Length: 64
Image (spheres, rainbow, N blue to C red):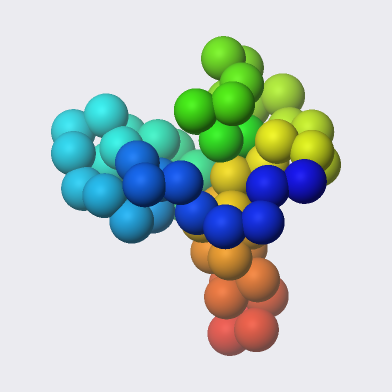
């Protein structure tokens, strides 16, 4: 399991590609894999799940 955010995490670094990932994840309420570890973002596996995605999901659960 990934323990900390990578330096290119879409939830941390803003770019056009990263924004499309985070927007899609929020819109469909989905978590995703780390794009640095797995080529398949949306077939989520616990060992390569994006830390930023996990933190976002926890934040949503706490507020809603």
